[in-house]
Length: 291
Image (cartoon, rainbow, N blue to C red; front, side, top):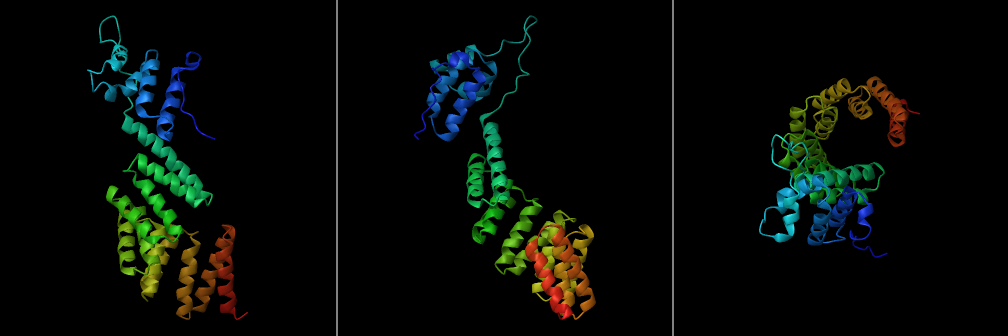
């Protein structure tokens, strides 16, 4: 069905001005109408709605010679005097701030799609959020997570880099980039990012666990166990840390401790509804017990 541009001249007298205003803004965002046409229509409703006039005041009055904007200047609030109070309490919302608000809405949609496992829709929503607000560090970070889950590690790295550039103290972005490096076998880069994430957030349990995985793959088992211990100290219900520590105990022939950790991991995975890793833990226990 072809989408038609709104025509505010039809039955606008029966609609509150702010409703027409919002419809016109929606038309700009969706591309259903061009900016000039929409501004002309907003001028007509500004005669009766001072809040909308103030919203556009900062940009539209930049060209005082343009006669078609006279009505907006005439609608400005009166000067301060003994008989009239100023209307400066009416909030002035710059267009940039409005774009940021719309960007936040797209970002929230991306979060919802991601939680539902709808990754392509999540990407589209994050793309829109970034288009509206190119400095939205969280949007780059969450889009990177989607790329990570899709195995598109280079794109994930690019977004993590951008998030860090926008917010150098973004611990989660360093953690995410470390994971992307780890998945590519770039352990030194991963280690550096996990170190930075922990420096920024010393109670970042997931970062300790993943740094432990790097140490494990490098054969540095003592450091790995130290990180898994710290993870469990920070979050006693972090099942992966028990499982990972159990692997090292198994390698070191410390069967009793390995069984204890795999049992703990299995119980936590079961409680958390993680069937895959619950079964993995049971398989490890079965092998250790010789069943």
